[in-house]
Image (cartoon, rainbow over all chains, first blue to last red; front, side, top):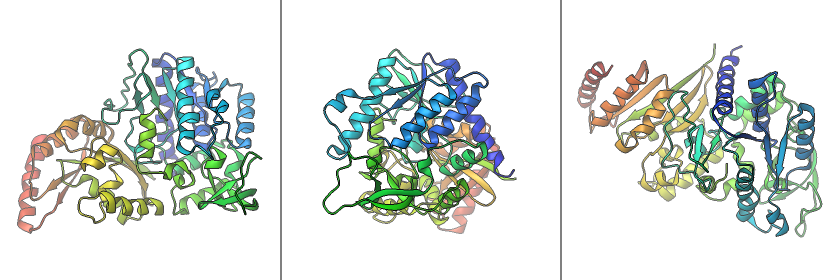
Length: 299
Length: 167
């Protein structure tokens, strides 16, 4: 009971935001990245319009390097719930052979940021929900719930629109768009507690299991398929690992764990001395790298 | 019953809002190890004095770090045994007052900082008035850099007077 008041408040806020966008925006879409935050956001979208289905499609920007289990989970979820999930892949990037091993930051830009912008332009979406949380990163902590983007999808952090109480101003000019973050005020702990309370299904990669991993630059990287180029002397070892965040498998570090249940995961998360972003290879590149990517149109 | 308290830190520019919130998070061990390490590295690279600059925990935009000021509201989350908290750190500069108002519209309580060596400034009064206008009912008055007891007392008396006027 003691926790539920807090979660109820967050849930009500998120549902209000989702309904507001559905009512006010011309062509909304919900980004679905298959991770735990997306799973919570999807659950909230279902709740917001139940028993109707959400009045907007879902979009998955696929870099082609996601964990196989994520794609299986996505397809199963879409089928089970009868949802329309649009998959978008930057084919130009695929044809040029852009990959996370050889292209570093350019890979993220081309396969994620550019792909997202292409997808939003192709379908003409005017508002896109994202599962970003303010507790994830310092520039996210500064972002409004309704975050406005220019015609070229750029975020201008020095000139954000005022956002008073719950009066969200959704007016945009032609070509501009809004990124909307209904989970802005949730913390990682809230997400896990809500998943438990609502019994939300999540990708099994979040639970510990024996998986083939190699240790690279301090990260435990899972060798998910044979596209992974092993360096000299590297042999995948079976270790009991789980993932705290999910993204592209070559860029997502696992943690050694034996947590098989939600309660064990919650206990580990609460006792963790490292933030969840440490398991994302791209986030530790340089100070301000998230802000720079957001200015360029990343979520 | 465990509830949620939303509060803001406000007051005039350079009165130590970001530093206060950052310091509280740091002292209360509410940071992850990697965040603490990043803070120490950032402080060495960018702080004004070379010592740990707690404001860097809040001032997350590149422009804020370059100029050493807060431009927009930063939201931070923490919880204790008794409560969950959301704290919004707001900018003190006059030109960013609209961003401070965004933070104020969301809060139930305001911590208003005053630098004892500066006293109650125009922005302190303006922020107090905005908080009151936005419907905030609870205030904490924090006097910073109070070197002498008499100075502190004079400031507090003056502040209370301003407050009575604003509320």
